[in-house]
Image (cartoon, rainbow, N blue to C red):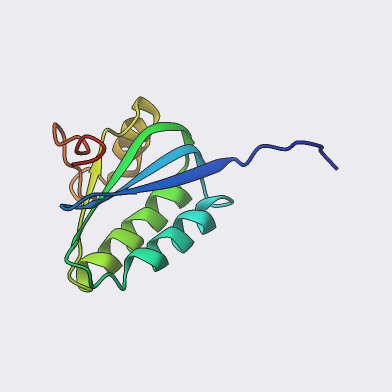
Length: 120
């Protein structure tokens, strides 16, 4: 058993008056995606006026198809509940895997729409 094992996927939420920004770092794959699912479950029932979620994937170091297709399903599920979802700042690894998986037109990519500054 490994001591001091670091989590392979880390998420952090920042809420402002316009949106909830979810920063995701590490490895997004079929083994770690459960953490992201749990994060989305927390976001779905928002009734506080913030009906927009931005996912910052700039710190994703590894990504596989399983992670991307799960992300697609999660984005679609939130959209069905009336929450607008955008993926901002995808890392080079994420962009490459999106192209390989053919998901460029199916994922809600928001190029040039970075997360709002903290505290806005």
